[in-house]
Amino acid sequence: MRSAIIFYSLEGNTRTAANQLAKTLGADLFEIRTVKEYPKKGLGKFLIGGRDSSFGRLPALQPLEVNPADYDVVVLALPMWAGKAAAPINSFIKSHDFGSSKVALMISSASGDAGSCAKDLAAKLGRSVGNMATLSLTNPGRMAPAELTEQVNGFVRTLRGEAGGAF
Image 1 (cartoon, rainbow, N blue to C red):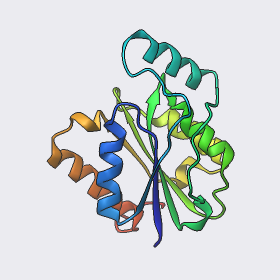
Image 2 (image 1 turned 90 degrees about the vertical axis):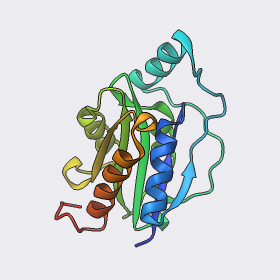
Image 3 (image 1 turned 120 degrees about the vertical axis):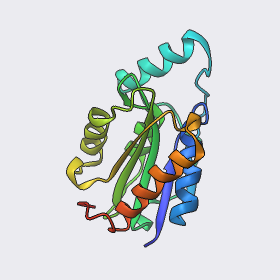
């Protein structure tokens, strides 16, 4: 199973989880970067990032040499902003064809409730959320390493079909 982890991370929380997932799954790892960086601190972080995600703005991305359709499984790893996918993920989805690849989601947030975000992303991808494996992580960059490993390992079992999930 040829797998890719394609992620966006503003502060490093999602990057931590994406690195762990890529290592455990044996997947290729690709980082989405914006042309203009989002603020990482203060009110601007919430106002600009939350605004872009809430209103569907699509920030320009730096070139990323990956074709999701070349993989059997693509995991999009992302932070949730204002209850929605981080805007750079939406830019990536809009500009790439996923072909017949299976798509899974790894969503990090402060609340841990990523259900509506997953449904929104599934719709943008033209997929059924019921057929997309999803891992919701609460502040993965602050998790105890053993806890993150346990959650990632369970997700990998699902991706490999060992957990009896729909994926």
